[in-house]
View 1 (cartoon, rainbow, N blue to C red):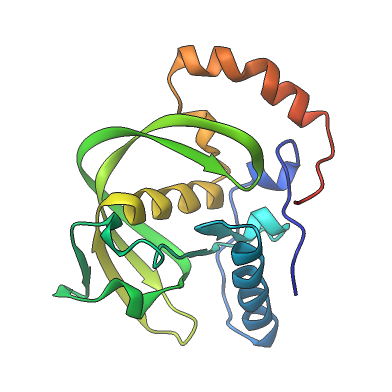
View 2 (tube, rainbow, N blue to C red):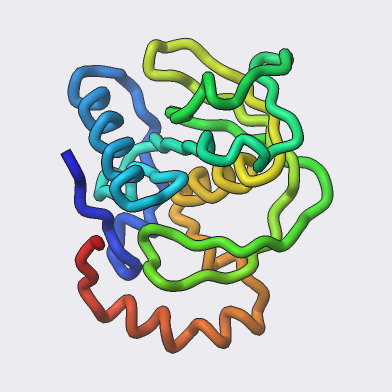
Amino acid sequence: MILDIVQFGEPVLRKKCAPVTEVNETLETLVKNMVETMIDADGIGLAAPQVGEDIRLAIVDVAHDPECVSFFKVDGEDAKMADHMPLVFINPELELSGPKEAESEGCLSIQEVRAKVKRPTIVKATLKQMDGSVKVIETDGLLARAIQHEVDHLNGVLFTDRVASTTKARLKKTLKELANTKWERR
């Protein structure tokens, strides 16, 4: 089922989400619906608060672009990224390293706004899976950026919070208008 994507200005996007304590049928259905919603919206990631759920759950899928990373490891071993997509994760923990690079980002919850965001280039993510197992993913490139972006959502942080001050000033009017508009998901 395609879910409505919550838009900028909705309070759930600013909440630090609660940890997931139990994987059950309701959560499994939510994940399935989130994957369908992300695909329908042409996104590469979606966090639970973006569909109105205040829990530490997110998905990322960059399998459409296998060249978007220079390395991908699972539990310390080289792995094929496509075998792990969509990447569904619960209660993530991140270790960030590498130089910070500015790349353009957008968000399904802030339609038609893109801006450059500086982020560390390398992520080591400890990600609890739906089956209770834990994967440790190490990667860079678009996948590292997408994981950081979705984890930010779980902490009530939006990509527009991370842009340079000159960009914030430029976006201020647009964001104010968006906050006062009820958007329908496209």
